[in-house]
Amino acid sequence: MIVIVGAGLAGLSTALHLSGVPYRVFEKEKEAGGLCRSYQKDGFTFDVTGHLLHFRQAEIKALVEGLLRGLLKKHSRRSFIYSHRTYTEYPFQVNTYGLPPEVVRECLLGFIDTLTNPARTASEDRSFKAWILENLGEGMAKHFMVPFNEKLWQVSLDELTSDWVSWLIPKPDLKDVVNGALGIKDKAFGYNPSFLYPAQGGIGALPKAFLSGVGEIAYGSELVEVDTGRRRAVFQDGRQGGRVEEYEILVSTIPIPELVHRCTDLPKAIREAAASLRWVSVYNVNLGVARERISDKHWIYFPEPEYPFYRAGFPMNFSPAMGQSGCSSLYVEVSHLPSALTPPAELLKRIREGMELAGIFRPDDEIVVADVRDIKYAYVLFDRHRARALPAILEELEARGIYSIGRYGRWEHTSMEDAISQGKNLADRLKTMAIGGVS
Image 1 (cartoon, rainbow, N blue to C red):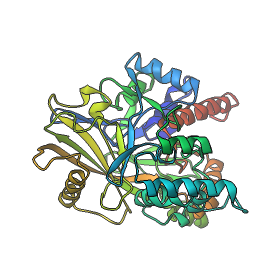
Image 2: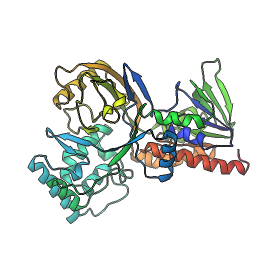
Image 3: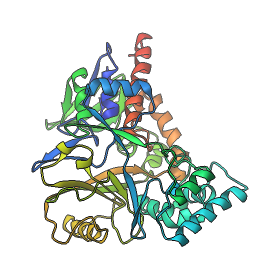
Image 4: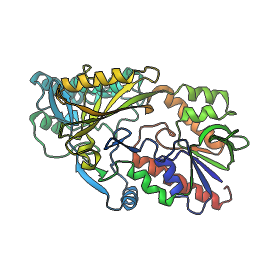
């Protein structure tokens, strides 16, 4: 028997692709989807913060399009950065046109310096900050990359590694940077110049589409203990003593620190290594405003400290079905360390002030819906401890028949597509093992 812990995209994809192999899915919430969920409140549909679909793998794209059967709509990205009291297009490194001339000059000269005076020691171990300076230069570091990322990650960028950034932050050519400073646009740039989004139901339509191909899910069942030697998992489901499941293979999609904490018989060194992994939490603040078209953009980045949020997005521009007629909806994201908490009323006050300062809200705007959700595990911190500890943790788990996948199960920064792909690949692997008599 294969036990799958978590009915987010990675867990659902694993189950969907395990045809012919016995499995059971356990989910602590009352519905599937994990962070890829949507909910309704007072006539608005909100996602659990922003989720947009980008595909690099034709196989996963075909799977998702088949599951959603024509529900996906394609959008050309309208994302911007708001700094120096002006909007510039995203990504920053190829769109400095419109910023104050002295800022554009600093960004150009800094980038040119990276080409004429390349770093002598561009090691794999260099910090994220060093990567920014070596690849984009001091001007871009000063005016966007460092302040934005320190607002997002809530730590000095000297503490983070750079082994994860290449697919998210491509280094442009000199021509691209010069064109961007002059306002010349001859190509889209970045990994997401377009995206797909459901016309109805929010991003939650995606996990719901998996359910018809997945067996029964035990909702309200939280993993509380794993005896890896005897291969027994205990789930708290409201019954006295909980529910005990014996397994041959356990697939976990929950955050690695949570999983390892529940495995009572792992070596002390592995438990300590997992307990020292770090992450940042995010307040997802969903708002409905009684005014149409407060913005024509999809999402906006805010690098400057006077704005408490690092990003805001506008679901009504993804799909009109997301909100009430005559209103606008938005999600606002505020990073915080897991131990640093802000009361919702204070958080909403700061966000309102920041939105008015940015000119998105008017002083007389009425907020008709306000919902604050604290996403405990939002972004994994890629620090040096993670780089050292993670391989050993995953190897030890797999040796005991536990496969940890997904964004938080692999403890990485990956997309919805990657979660689906990891589930499929693991299912294919487990089916091969089952044929060989392992399961």
